[in-house]
Amino acid sequence: MEELLTQLRAAAEPTRLRLLALCARGAWCVSDLVAILGQSQPRLSRHLKLLTEAGLLVRTPEGANAWFQVPGGAELARLVLARIPEEDALLAADRRAAARVAAERAREASESFRRHGADWDELRALDIPAAPVEAALLAALPERPGAKLLDIGCGTGRLLELVAPRVAQALGVDASRDMLALARTRLAEKGLAHCAVRQADMYRLPLADAGFDVVTLQMVLHYAEDPAAALAEAARVLKPGGHLLLLDLAPHERGELLTRFAHRWPGFDDAELNGWFGAAGLVPLQPRGLGPLRLWCAEQRADHHAHSA
Image (cartoon, rainbow, N blue to C red):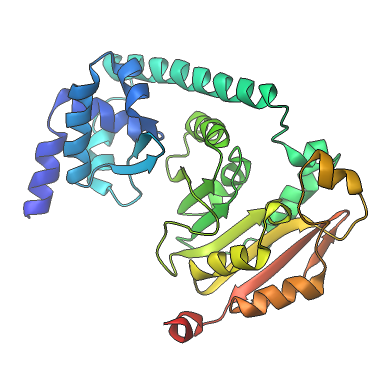
């Protein structure tokens, strides 16, 4: 009962209700919320601290910033917000201001990519049609009610957007803050509050063992210095019986990809992937060819974490 009372007290304040309403639609940092609500940073920081301590928000550090979002299990927050009329003038004004801030964030991130000459849509850059690739990924996604999915190397969040209707929760991780800025904007625009992103190193995921039903890596592994270690870390966070979906380049002789796009690996063959899967405790399933790409699937052994302990 005490936890419930603490949450009710934390929510029972106008500014904190506005913060909850914003953070239920996506992740925001303090500077964003200052711009949206027009209040001072110390004031908002105190409100955010109370909401986080009450369990109504989750705080995710990222460099000098921290991002705040309503977590998937915060049912009280969603019940309270459901009682507020959608046409409430103050919340509507907050949503308009949030849209402007998100658009500016995306513009700055896009300009940063252009300044550095990067093309974050690698399928397009490689002249690979995205539609059949995305359809194959969705077809390979196991049917699991209440599934939790992790997308390693989420980029701009396109895969999270695609799988959102099929999962209860989805988390994307990426090393690039610019990528994450674009991903957060995409998720907020689509209203995908059950999807989140955070900065992380794929070799040292800040996540507990066996926390996800599905882990995906799309066009990520050919950049890895140590693919076997990356797959082992992906396997660590998979639940027993969980599935790993790996989409990447089949073996090729396009040397320009190693220089122009800084690929570290000229594609992968089934034998080396199966070897890495086995070392990570994964059971390989039947791969599928998609032109220059290949979709590998593997299942986590039911006893993997018991053997690892």
